[in-house]
Amino acid sequence: MTYTSQSMFAVPLTSKALKLAKSFQQQYETPAKARQVYLNTLAVYAVDTYCQCLGIETDLEASDSLNPVMQPLMDVADLEITGIGKLECRPVLPTDEKCYIPTDTWENRIGYMAVEIDESSREATLFGFYPPINPLEMMEQVSCDSFQPLEAFLDHLHRLETALDFFHSHNPVAVKVRERLNEQSLPEIIAEMERIYRTYNKYERRYAGGEFLASYVPAKPDFAFRGDTPIVDREESDDSQQTELQDLAEELLEKLDEIWGSDDSDTSVNSESPINQNSDATAPIPQAAIVPPSTNTTGIISLNEWLQKSETNSQYNWQSLESFLSNKEGNLIFRFASAPRSRTADTESPTLSASNVREISLAGYPVVLIVNCQKNTEKTEVLIRLYPLSAAQTYLPEGIKLIVIDGESGEIFLEAQARSADNWIQLEFSGEAGEPFSIKVALGDLSVTDNFAI
Image: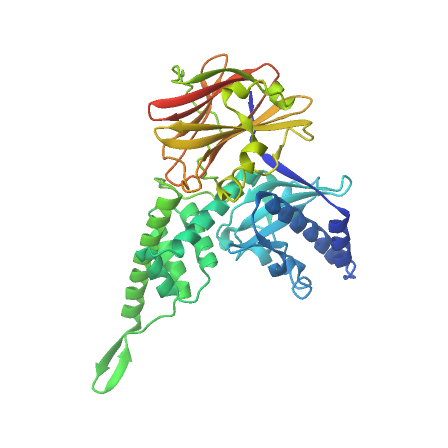
């Protein structure tokens, strides 16, 4: 089996999308500007389509890239994610090795999505996400290899959404922040605090967060009196206010750490190689471990029979994803599960696809295991996700593991473990026909294992 390191999502460029892009293009006499606007429009269209497939609400009317007043003034391809902020959609041509990120977009962005525009095939392919970093460290040319898989965007968006929920709560820290910052934009504050959380080590966050909060709050001078004349001790006032804001930033980041998952790092993240801090650990673990027998196993399930829509495996308590989702309408936990399977760098045109679901209960925690497989001429791609079953159960039980075991050696091939605030975890790999493997879901001493053959 071969680990798949990068995911993609292809969007056909419809006649409607091309017509809109050309209509904008024709408004500019300068060829370079006309071309820029044309590609930007197609990139925004592709990312908007992707978001609609995932059930992520967008607001095209709030995007400067499609605003006839703002369009000629800046090189932007922004897409407003409703209630969250602007996602920059940067077009890349098939021959490009770097993605151009103009200075106009270095601030007020929740991230950057790279979109390859292939005009010959009339297709746009989303191939990577780049999280926001300090504008002082940004560069106009970013290597395409530096972009993270699309799943990193979903993780990033989840962090922003959960933080927004916290900011609207009655938690004393959230209340204090709202009162202190008054009318400031909560999405902007959340996006910046997420960047500080991700790019600074835990010892530096207090000061970076304090400086950021201070940028929103005007200085409040203290007054002393000499005779009848008030004077301002500005230095003492500034130090006092800075300490107060640092304390508040530290409290806030501690709360966000509880929501997003514990982070014990003591080094900052390299801005040139942004790290996906998702719990979806998709790299093989260095020391392979022999897996003991599980407490619950099934017979061998043939993925080929799944792809042929065979019902022979119904005895193993699996059902189609479509059937499962039909009974889960309105449950937003599964909004990503219902999206079309993303393509991978090794898979240009999958010919067969199937997604099946199994409900599992471990130690009183009901969870859902979703297995998606796609077959092309050379190999079969497998994507596995684990979700909480109930809409009332927002997160997976902390410590639950999703494990892929090599069927020939009995060794762990891939493993992911849920943190305190993960609402899904996943693993992804590929294999050849006939190759055996097992999927194990484990919580403490309890586990359930399903055996498969590609």
